[in-house]
Amino acid sequence: MPAFPTITSRTQALQFQETAYMTIQQPARYRDTFQRMKAALGERDRTLTGWDEIEEFLWKSGVRNREGGRVDEQTVRRWRRDLNFPLMKGRGALPGRHRATAPFTTTFAVVSWLVSLPYSGGFRFPRIERVSTKRHSPKRSFV
Image (cartoon, rainbow, N blue to C red; front, side, top):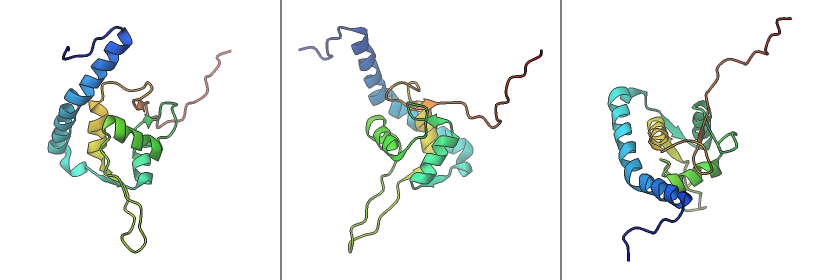
């Protein structure tokens, strides 16, 4: 039995290559980027606590879902499950036992994760768009 699966199509080859990157190279690239950011800009790291802060940071950073809209809780949970998004999950409350806790991450962790992905866009990966600070002005006609 071969050590690697038999690849018969270009799609299977790309899926195998992506899986290999996400399991071997992505974690190392994430750690390296995070350590460099921490060393250079350590005092600028911010905590993001709760879905509102996480979603707002992603929106302001230009991160969109696959349709180009706002990222929601379900999307972030899927990225955590499938793409190792750096998120400490919150916990629901159990009456009489413990209170609810909010999800938690940091800005450096999120940016390092984004940089370590093989590409943006497509079906599984976050879509990155340019963040515009100016309103687009209508085109002028020179008639």
